[in-house]
Image (cartoon, rainbow, N blue to C red):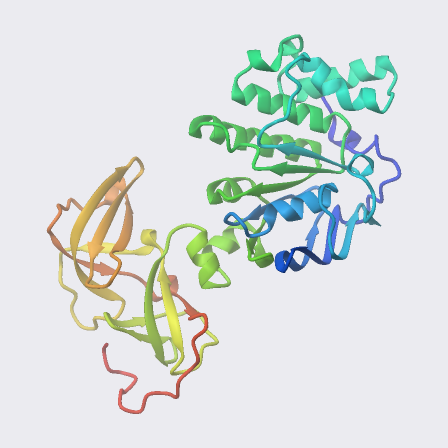
Length: 389
């Protein structure tokens, strides 16, 4: 037995299906003088997979717990299906939560675990049986209905926890790092299954994770969180290719950063030479900036460049790593941190530790961000714009 997409919200006819699934408006949550969530506004569209991504302590789990009703905001409002849920207990909200620990009852069978919430609501027994079978079919666990959680693998327990959360057909499913306890291969398999399940059901998923790979592979949109606020909210491609800040650029994927000063339109002078970008930047001439280039956009060659040395650094290979589809090189360019360069394995140059190389990249792949806390200085008068750094 399976669930047709058009049946997704039939168990909650009172929901306003024209409204966004979740809306947080200027929500704050304090623990003493510390703001775990700080004046946060966020909208989860109906039927989307949205991830809250960030390091420990950024406020993502507190945000999820406030939507669920386990935490209460000190300021602001939270709407679910267009209605404020302030003061509404968790079991009366159109949401359900899946935790990393799964929280299955060990003395109950799989079917009894899934049925528990329905029994608490005094649902008729015939309806309970029908919904439990339907939920177990959704996660391919029907043949395990009579087993106990201790007889299941971690991935199977996670499926049961999903079935228990989905059996009531919530408008929003909240997932708090549910894949964190799984090994890498199983975690990647479950990422695919979760996304397929969400797409088929059309339920809004809010997924909390510190794993950028999980967020990038599953999400329709990602909210990068920092110190209780959203640093950037966009689709995965935008987050990766057009980060809004140095923080986002460094947190999602890997970056090589150089410190420098803007010396003209699209030009930054660093201690290692001049870097040019074709991307627009709001930093005025003389401003202190951080230049970012991703490892996969850097080319390696043993041939010394002719002409301009812009966007080109000489260095020495100090490390090699085979990573299956790619090869990673560490190149000492005389800065405090070596450059990380990643090339597709078939196209990777055959290099050895100690080889002298040139690292080159295109201006279109250079991002420039203002240095946090830095104040712009007057434009330098002694360095012409054409001078190489």
